[in-house]
Image 1 (tube, rainbow, N blue to C red):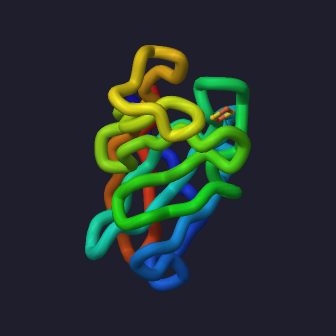
Image 2: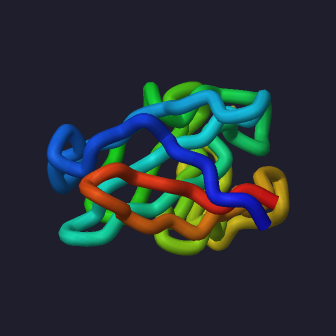
Length: 111
Ligand code: FES
C-alpha cells in the first residue's frame, strides 16, 4: 500500500491536536495522542460530520453533529449519537491508517 505525505510537520501537531488533510480524494483526520500520531477517515459514519470540528478528549474524538464517539487509536465506535452506550451499530468504525514520521513529516499509508 502506498505511503502518502500529509504535508504536516510533527512539530506543528502538538499532543492533543488534530488536523484534516485531503489526500487523493480522501478526507483524513490526523491526531496526536501523547507521543503517537494516528490517522483515520475524517468523516463520521453516522451522517457525515467533519470530525476535525469535533472535540478531542485524550484518545477519543466526539462528532460535532450528534456526539458519536470514536477511539482514535483504533477507529472503533465507543458511543452512538447522543452518547448512547454500548453502541448499537448506528455509527460504524472509522477506517484507520498506519502512520509514520519521516524527517519530521507525518506520512499515512492509504489502501
Ligand atoms: S454525523 Fe456524527 S454523530 Fe451524527
